[in-house]
Image (cartoon, rainbow over all chains, first blue to last red; front, side, top):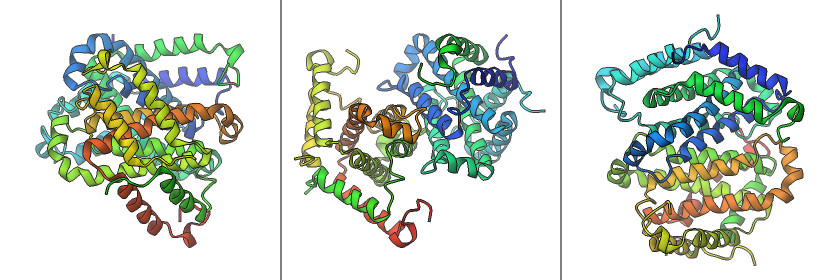
Amino acid sequence: MGDGATLGELRRRVADFVAKRNWEGYHNPKDLAIALAVEASELLELFQWRSVEQVEALLPEMKDSISEELADIFIYGLSLANALSIDLSEAILRKMERNEERFPVDRFKGRAYG
Amino acid sequence: MGDGATLGELRRRVADFVAKRNWEGYHNPKDLAIALAVEASELLELFQWRSVEQVEALLPEMKDSISEELADIFIYGLSLANALSIDLSEAILRKMERNEERFPVDRFKGRAYG
Amino acid sequence: MGDGATLGELRRRVADFVAKRNWEGYHNPKDLAIALAVEASELLELFQWRSVEQVEALLPEMKDSISEELADIFIYGLSLANALSIDLSEAILRKMERNEERFPVDRFKGRAYG
Amino acid sequence: MGDGATLGELRRRVADFVAKRNWEGYHNPKDLAIALAVEASELLELFQWRSVEQVEALLPEMKDSISEELADIFIYGLSLANALSIDLSEAILRKMERNEERFPVDRFKGRAYG
């Protein structure tokens, strides 16, 4: 069964990892934001010099690397939420509501720019 | 109660948002990787020209903006997982196991470089 | 006549700007690296959700914004070179030589991956 | 003497490198913007988990890696200027003038936020 884990469970796993290594000092918000940007770029690098069509064809062999880079992004994101006691589910759902208002279906159907 | 949502529930919300707007073409893996990098940099920008100590002092007023940028990162990350049918919980837990092996507590306690 | 300015002339202009505002403290290497990443993402954002073909069609109206973001990247790059007394011409030419060896014309003609 | 090369000379070297490999297709504006973001993050990664003070102490051994990543950024920036026939010197000087107006010395002396 896929993705049954709650964000809370994943956060505790990351918090435990950080606490056991006394890494709370490293995992300050500014350095976590740097880490997130670095990991997002490592994900982006997988697509460098490849057209959307080439990516499509290469996806089977790229999927594992993409999953791993995406996991890194989520792990640092969860750690930042831990460092600042952010309620992530709430933040995500609130942002989804704002996006739903900002991009009404009738104006944005099939278009990224309304 | 905080962060009781499962990744699966959040993914479905994002998938529904994308499907209703026929945005699956925009949300191809390469363009989602770009979106993730752009959002990660918007998060990073909040910390620009501010020392770790200044950030500490400014956190109360920064927390909402940080939460919002972090939500954007998660939303695009969930959409990428949707686009590629990645089991995120599994990818995150597998990466955490690898990190636990790679950074043994006795060698990395209090040190980012072993 | 285009681009007759030497890197040295541009560096002095940037150094003077920074010195007059006593910004050497802000312009430390780590924060300049953050600034470069943030500006590179602002450039990237201009291309978000646009295909290579759409970009091609939109270039006339995008050129000014691209030029401005690119200028920001160069300005921070010049400031980092100033902060560390890096000889940029030399670093660029050395890297070009390494690239020429690493990507021999006969193997890489028309291919990014040899 | 350092940095006597003009931007024009460096641009021609990069243009020649790209042309000899028939890489103009790869070096389209969108993919160059991706390359710039990836390189800027590789530079940023050198500073990851290191405080401003640690960076200061490590600079002698970091300088070569920083120079090399900075060179990569400039090379892709020059290639983007080539792809779009942007007059870089002009774009940089125009942006410096705008910065000088936007950050008047009397209000911003020693402060990044006026």
